[in-house]
Image (cartoon, rainbow, N blue to C red; front, side, top):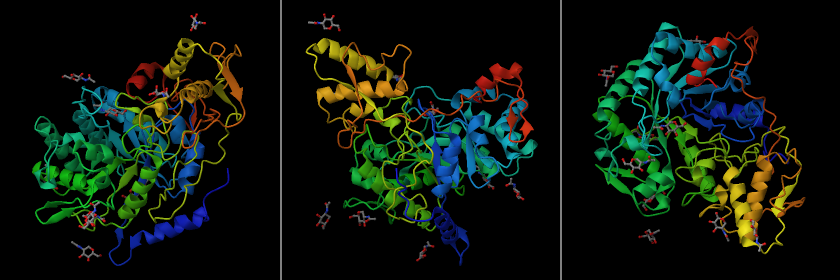
Length: 500
Ligand SMILES: *[C@@H]1O[C@H](CO)[C@@H](O)[C@H](O)[C@H]1NC(C)=O
Ligand SMILES: *[C@@H]1O[C@H](CO)[C@@H](O)[C@H](O)[C@H]1NC(C)=O
Ligand SMILES: *[C@@H]1O[C@H](CO)[C@@H](O)[C@H](O)[C@H]1NC(C)=O
Ligand SMILES: *[C@@H]1O[C@H](CO)[C@@H](O)[C@H](O)[C@H]1NC(C)=O
Ligand SMILES: *[C@@H]1O[C@H](CO)[C@@H](O)[C@H](O)[C@H]1NC(C)=O
Ligand SMILES: *[C@@H]1O[C@H](CO)[C@@H](O)[C@H](O)[C@H]1NC(C)=O
Ligand SMILES: *[C@@H]1O[C@H](CO)[C@@H](O)[C@H](O)[C@H]1NC(C)=O
Ligand SMILES: *[C@@H]1O[C@H](CO)[C@@H](O)[C@H](O)[C@H]1NC(C)=O
Ligand SMILES: CC(=O)N[C@H]1CO[C@H](CO)[C@@H](O)[C@@H]1O
């Protein structure tokens, strides 16, 4: 694959850093970071991702599963600021000052000591959200309080702690931002939560899914883009709202104000546009969204309520995750700017300069051999074909075939081939029986790419990432120059604390 990047990336990076300051006001521009989740069968090698981020001028990264081998890849550079996450399921285990201190040491301190720039901690993710589940994590604020105290007591001066929230912490279906408030059932919790972050001056973090918000409100999808082409606007006490982003951002500001914290910084922990599996989810729309949104952020335009203010955002997300849950829909596996093999899906200029460029691809990725497993198309036994199709899809990711997906236009036979191939690739093209592409006699290996238009039949990457022991397999694993002190004794506790 040729390099699609037309500039010397280093020059561009330097240029960006300088163009990022307004010299008159010395106001820093909004930061554009990215989220990296790793729920995939074939993972990109962490050092390649570090390179990818640097080449694209991305200086902020959020990790959902901050495993040790991933964090170690950032050793020495100090350029990329990292946010680590304490998973929801681990919140209940932060029960006292020592568990808090222990987690901080294992996921922040240990890495800071070797110049890995871990600067932010997200304690839980959307703990009060019922978007995907009925359970909520009410203990999130207690864990946040303990982590916050842990930061102070243990001398982590440069580290902030907060918890991102989804937009469903707001009362639904308000017509104007000024009417916004936290949901009545959550309000006491949100007030308590706000007082914790207010005391430490940590930002409030909101996660936004623009097309979803628009569809919930019955708005035209056009309103999800920064430069809407529709004639729809919302007027609110003399302020004009022209898109979902400004509407949501100011709604949260109003809610924060009503909860007694009007001056806190508000950042966006998660904003993205999936390319499959949701009405309006496709690469053309995703490309357009970011082409308008990122320069809007970089120019510090702000919102009607906070004009000319810088807003920090994290793009969601780096690459597709074929093992993500799909309880809400196929889109959950298609958030990536990149496919799981490190190829970009669309043009995006991460620096916010608005250039019409593809981002650089992941260097050094090795694909498995260019071969695909397809249905030979010769059987008359429909029962058998359907059965094999279902077996393949049960194991592999067939979400692109679903309604609205990039492969929803395939014929029945192409459908079956797509499924066979996903299975074949997921199993790394190999099985001890040599019968991986058999499918009860229906499969056939081909060497010509069977992709159909926008529907890509992928070849997976060689899964070269070392198995992640989280430092557990050996008590003396070296962590960038010194010995990690991880005791096998604590294995169970580590699992609970979400360190693996
Ligand atoms: C959530 O709870 C409601 C009723 O309280 C129920 O109808 C729904 O099926 C539940 N959803 C999930 C995902 O458990
Ligand atoms: C918990 O964490 C996951 C991410 O791992 C997130 O998607 C979910 O919304 C969170 N909250 C709840 C209440 O499950
Ligand atoms: C932390 O902040 C202090 C000043 O507040 C600064 O001198 C120091 O270099 C920072 N440390 C790191 C690791 O960024
Ligand atoms: C937030 O902090 C300010 C002082 O910095 C204080 O005046 C205000 O009452 C606090 N608000 C909440 C909700 O704790
Ligand atoms: C917007 O309004 C202009 C002038 O009233 C009209 O010509 C145009 O068709 C409208 N556009 C849409 C998308 O409704
Ligand atoms: C925002 O900046 C623009 C141009 O820099 C200026 O015209 C405008 O007055 C500013 N608005 C506020 C509220 O500061
Ligand atoms: C079709 O395939 C199924 C197995 O999936 C088999 O049980 C059945 O006998 C086959 N039918 C014919 C007509 O060959
Ligand atoms: C292909 O598979 C998808 C997902 O199972 C299904 O919705 C679609 O109808 C199938 N298409 C054909 C032509 O059978
Ligand atoms: C940024 C932008 O072009 N927004 C437009 C959205 O729609 C309204 C109503 O037509 C326009 O006035 C805005 O200019």
